[in-house]
Length: 559
Ligand code: FEO
Ligand code: CA
Ligand code: CA
Image (cartoon, rainbow, N blue to C red; front, side):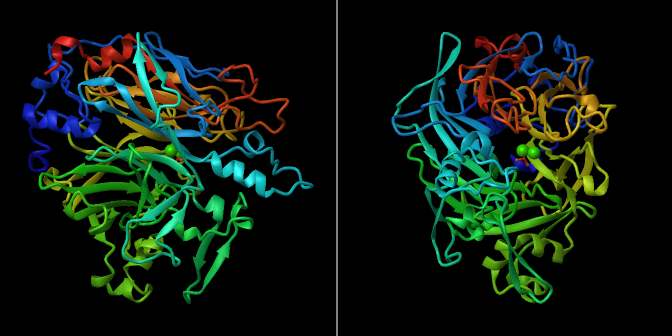
């Protein structure tokens, strides 16, 4: 399929693509059948197409209210809140991020396993430790509470009479935490280990063609610090923000990887071949010959965009990791065997992969403005990358980068890069983060302005108010416009948008409501307004006419 990606989709190919993109999707909006000429525009279809109905979208205004507000035609139900019991042993973790849902049976999209990332903790809420109080030192017990509340959750969920509910105590329900043993998918040990302890900093993720979850370790240096090297290649240690290494001195080299989790039993492995850095996400594509292409970005100021291409079918181990030169449109191989400049600095390929940021810079990779989420457009085949911002370079509002692989081949070594959409007041959004294409190819986007700068008079983020969810319709009169359809509670970020396979539900995380709280008796948010009177990161299920209209699906359209 990758051969003619830019030019034309046959119906079969499109279905095959949707199957990969959204796991067993077997629905096709009828108007897509007439939409194979993507030469007119790869992002916005011809709005005069008679078959296309105009979705009636009423945009929300920016809001600083402490609530999750939705556009007309949308409703939400809170599915899982921090601290909820999911089994006899386990509770739902903190700061939920990436979500994805795998049904047990493709024919029944309303019963399956939900994966949720838990990225980091607000210590005051989770362990009671207050970093602003100089008289306090974080205890081992506090560290252990924090370690439990990161990682991920697997929870069986079911839709009954239009409402999603968790199946409490289902044998699949379990937590993966910063204390869970995880194997390394690599032939050499790292810091003497082939099994390491835990995962944390789990930001966004992905899904494999073989139906397992991918969770990505992002700001790993917050928990066990970082090892840095001077010009003479002499190592030194930078301490972490959370100080976990004071009680559990696990090597920081065990973190910053792409992690795969088996939904059925929770077994996890870290994929060393995809490199070590602040992975936001990992978006996989299976080529015709079953080799895997994985896109992943490093969400740090002036870091890079990467692509792994496997040499073996369905492998995330054998293959080559490339880094992007977006100026010249080249994927540069991070290959120690064939790169003298890498041989001069690193002792082997394992060291290149552990210190991949340094290696990327030696090859002349392009510095980008914090690559966040990456999604493949199911209609044009182009790859979209959120560049959230880079204040160090004066980019406050970010943009979305479009990558067009040469001849639409995902294993190509050349590409064209351009800006698809810029953040800022003109387009009404700032700091793009997560992206999700729905089943019709409309692009949904969440934003991540930092909690300390939102709603501040002297901040460039003031006009945008609370972080929000937007949709960019593909068809009709509103095609290409950026339309705000949800705004989050105070201090929060909406993350992890994921459509159910039938396109009728949007799962969404509400992360860090009330993050600016400094005193538990005066939280800055009370969402989701439960009996505990504290803010709780939660996953909601959003349904309603608007989602169904955007997805344009009905029973009769099943194929
Ligand atoms: Fe955790 Fe890059 O956002
Ligand atoms: Ca993110
Ligand atoms: Ca972010």
